[in-house]
Image 1 (cartoon, rainbow, N blue to C red):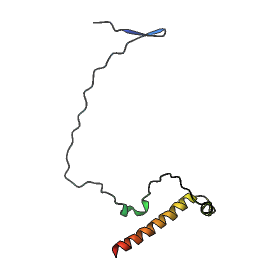
Image 2: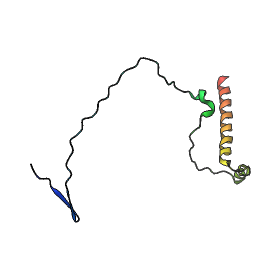
Image 3: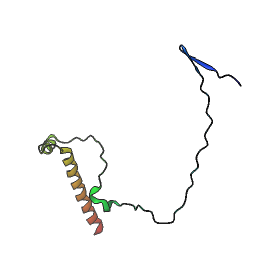
Image 4: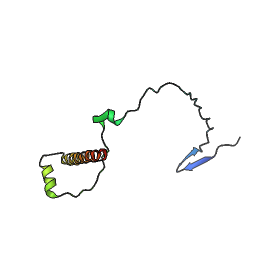
Length: 102
């Protein structure tokens, strides 16, 4: 047998690390199940109130008087601006739906 080589680091001499034997990977057995899944898919229309859209930061230039009007109600003015824009969006979507249905 060969003696192990030593590596010199500063004042101390430590034995060189040897390679460990490779472990064999564990196997996994899969079984197919022909029954209904326990968890059903949840649709947004079923959730309704619990849906929270993703927020995305944007830079938006608004008139100073518009910002002052929203800010005078106190904290949360950005949320109120978002709510006003959402209401306008929904109203326009309803109008478009009525026009396409006629």
